[in-house]
Amino acid sequence: MFITSRRRELESDLFETRLLGKKAVCMAGEEAVEKFYDNELFVRKNAVPGVISKSLLGEGVHGMDGEAHRHRKRMFLSMMTPERIEDMKDIALQELDKKAKLWEKRSRTVIYDDIREVLVRSGCRWAGVPLKEEEAAQRTREMGMMVDSFGSLSRMKDGKKARKSQEEWLAGIVRQVRKGKLQPAEHTALYIISHYRDENGKRLSASEAAVEVNNAVRPLLATGYFIVFGCLALHEFPDISEKLAADENGFSQMFAQEVRRYYPFAPAMAAKVKKPFTWHDYQFKKDQLVVLDFFGTNRHPDSWNDPDTFNPERFKDWKGSPFSFVPQGGGDHYAGHRCAGEWLTVIVMRAFFKYFTTHLSYEVPEQNLAWSLSRVPTIPKSGFVITNVKRLHASPEQLEQDEASQTVIKS
Ligand code: HEM
Image (cartoon, rainbow, N blue to C red):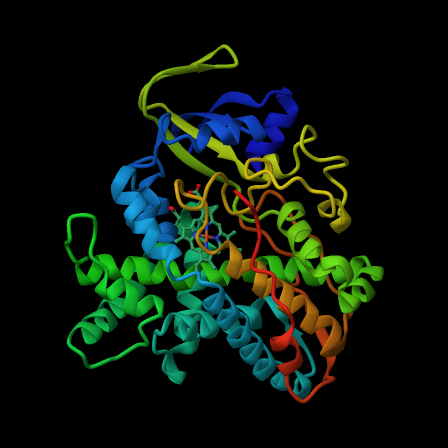
């Protein structure tokens, strides 16, 4: 996390640097987030370097502005009804339980490897995307390469190849839907995107639709990084397991939030200045590239007491600012680019952490659990290995019935 460490070194929330060969202004902190998500000041078109668009993000909703963006964003948010968020939890728990049956038979399991396949299977089921058994490993590998690509140029090359293969696969599926050969349920992402018409009443081409179907499935795999870090936290702070199992006063929600705040995943986002303005005596020029430091904001001392300490209870009295806690972007979900999948992420994290504490017993053998801030994205070196796994219940049904909290952030 170069930006965060540079910002701390310079003791400034605003500094100029070069990123991927381009001159950029980096900023962090609650006030900076509020500026960055002001649609009057910033635009997204061509802000993210092409290599990242062609590997991780794709050329769809992420780079759109104005009415076209608002319209496309409403399409994504129409998928996130309370029922569909519940569906995701149930599907993901079923897939996790299926995988855990295999873990019981194995001598050792690397959570990072297996959780990604669980999430890809869950994401496809939830989105209505048919995933043949024989292609589950390939599609997991590809989505994994895309998500893992963003911190290195060589990984971006792999990510770009993976994206090409994914988009071809998904464009074929969209064509089948349009010909009536495949009939996904009306509430699924596949149906919604295949039949979506933009603000001018125009249908997306099959390849444009494929980018957005990928945007509704691929990012769930990113939740796997937080799940692995959550397992690490459960291991390193054993009293948390008991609190999670009891889940009093919404502890599982607080734990999931603290995992998203404390551990690094999405480091930053880029935008371009729409019209000149001055902030903190710095003159932002039209078209200037600006990078917002997410990780540094989540650990900013002006917003968080003891920011470098892991403490789920800090969320008990949290005032809920959409600008200080930005693991998945900030601001308003509808008006801006804040992540459309935040509710899904948190509900799956809560359900999985409760499953690990109440439905499984396992051992954590000696392994290298160190993680480095210089790799982006990062996870513990070993991928978190568990052994002697036993399922404690016949099914995850009881967790499926748990009262769900869909509210992540009031923005
Ligand atoms: C660990 C899990 C996730 C992380 C860390 C994450 C992170 C992010 C970030 C940083 C952004 C960009 C914010 C910005 O441009 O300002 C974003 C946008 C987005 N995310 Fe996520 N995300 C996650 C899960 C999901 C899931 C599960 C979905 C949907 C199934 C999803 C769908 C989207 C979409 C559609 C956008 C584009 C929003 C827009 O441009 O308006 N994400 N996410």
